[in-house]
Each structure stands twice: as structure tokens, then as C-alpha cells.
Length: 245
Image (cartoon, rainbow, N blue to C red; front, top):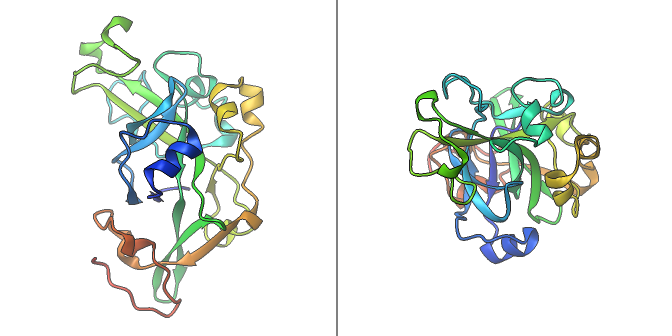
């Protein structure tokens, strides 16, 4: 699974990499479920937008009928929760890019769970394949004219969420976890946003292990409240790290 990641590259680098307006960008060293985080949606691919990590399908009776942080790539065309978003045929759900520059996994050891950060070998930012949705409480359903530019109006009960698509791990990540995020190949990001389901499905493969590296980090990353450069620093396997920063 992918349950924690980072994105702290300079705004100019992020803007150049994805050709987007980064006005809404805030660096994150320890992005966690339930937080509002930057994504690029097929609805407006020219700017970063902040959506809540934890997918709630538009048809849910309650926003509590969701919170899906990951979606298995093998079931996107059949799972009722995700198939409409994957098909990208409605105005309230679709595909998105989840920019990141690393993600975290935990490995059981004799001393407890050891967190690892996984990055590209060149430390460049990448896009994880994602799905997004807009959920409105049944009592506040409105027409399309309630949205000025494809975003919710000022109704605080309307929520936009996203999930990260996962696949089988490559040889590197397999030592850490049995699933990994779908990392889109450079130059294929627009294909994920714009292509039909058959073409988009071709992108749901694990990233090459040769392009990635993993290293141990402090257990400070266990607490989402620890969101500072300390949590991305490499430690030795034998380090005794603190849970506070």
C-alpha cells in the first residue's frame, strides 16, 4: 500500500516538471491520510489543487462511507467504488496525478517496525496515479451551476477526495511491502489524465526497480504531526531514533 509520502521539491521545479500553477503548493515531508494535499486532476490539469486523501465515492450516503487511501489497479474497472472515476465519464469523479518525491514503507524487525523512504535514484519528483471524487451531502445536492470553475462552492459540507492507485511491487519495494504505488513513467502523465480506459490501463505497471532506492529513516515519521526535514534524513540501520522532532 501507499500510506505516507513526501513532496518538498522547490515550487519552480514542481511547476516546470508538471507544467502547472503551484500557487496552492506547500512542501510536505510527511503527507498522511486525512490531510489536504496537492493533486492535479483531469478536470483542471493546469494547476495544483488541494484534495483530502481518502476517497469518498460521489454516491456514498455519508462521507464516512469512504476514506479509501489506496485503490488496487487490478480492480479499477469492476470495483463499484472506483470504476466511474477510472472511466472518467462523469463531472464528479475522474483521474488525477499525485505528485511526490518519495514514499514510506515499514518493515518488521526484532526491534519493531523500521520505516524506509523510497525515492528515485535521481531524487526527481514523480507522479503517482490517482483517482479523485467530489462528494456532496444529499441535502445540499445542487446543479452544475453551483461550481464556477469546476471546484466546489463555499458549502463546507462538499468534500473533494483522492486515492493512490497501487500495483504489484518491483524487486526493490517487494522487500518492504507486497504493494506499491503506481508511479507513472516520465512523459506519460497526460496519458493517465486523458486516455481511454484501455490505454490508461497500460500504465498500471510497477516502476523499474533500477530507477529507485530505499533507505532507513527515523521513527519520527510514524507520527504525522512530525512534518519537518528530519523525517527524510537517512539513518544507519542500528540508529536508535526518537519519535519526536
